[in-house]
Figure: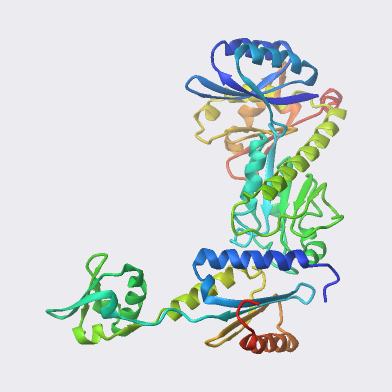
Length: 186
Length: 303
């Protein structure tokens, strides 16, 4: 334990995590969290219990899909999904096959309209990235050596300045396990 | 001792104010005119303030205290990363500018972390060019007391440390303000504004102390007296930088290249002497600037 009283730091980290999540629009995504820091060791540990993301959505629910001479044409109607759609199309068909005509119109060469309509977009991945972004933003900048424990429900990140010790990893694992059993926002 | 004030008013009969300032032995540091409105930063002997106040009332202007006018202060954060910047570093810098200081915000190259936090000799030399430095530190008491304090322990300029946790005593600094810490948004709540004011008053106290020390062994001339003469140099007039000449407590920073202009600057005449004889002129660590440190009266007379 640190010989100094670090209550200010805990309170401050609590505030900045809340503000950061609000800024990135992921407050509802995180249902509970714990921050443990031992500046004397030193390590910094943060564990987040993740809530459920929006249900996945079909491309046909957020865009109109038509046939085009050499593939399918997508006209986006709900722009909120556009970044996720583009990423997904690039992953599946490659950047060369995806041609963005305007802000709302995309032509996918070599894809059938049926395949495009039934494609599903999962918002979970994108939100997880936002949560991760919030964590990087509050994590002490010098603590570059990191150890991550991530599953569908809990994300635990441990960081330090030099070598990671087994005992800290154990503390992180215990906290990770504990977070699976905590109630929402206690 | 000189007192620095800001006159805020109209241009009507402003020459009367300039004449009075000259009569009482003061100087105009800076004039900023916007159409018919003008703000004048002036330095006068403190016992002459009532005369200036009376003239201000006569001209229908306002006289504002700018205790930090004529100083250049560095606000230093451990890094330029979003963990330390822009809040609250920029808020503190703005607070100091409101009190009349010229500020520079600086991030260290390797100031992050705990044991890994360090400051290079170059960075120290840059900070030494300013009248005072504010170090904006973080949340952990352990980290500040054991490690971050090393960042400023060798600095000769007065340092004010700003940090999160309540600390009774921090070595190597002339002032300490606690209760700020890391922020992810601007400091605009009431208690945060009070904190900014506290930082402002702490710096003012540090600057006042430094002024007092300078008064014990007074400078040969006040920096503001040299400013007017240097402002006549062609290169300074051509300079597009917002403040081509910046006053320090014991000299000036002229933002023209040292290598090309050192001889012309040294040749400027001040009360019958060459500037080169009554001041040390050197190259600034910040590119394209020249530093002038005025010698004390004793130094000039004995030399």
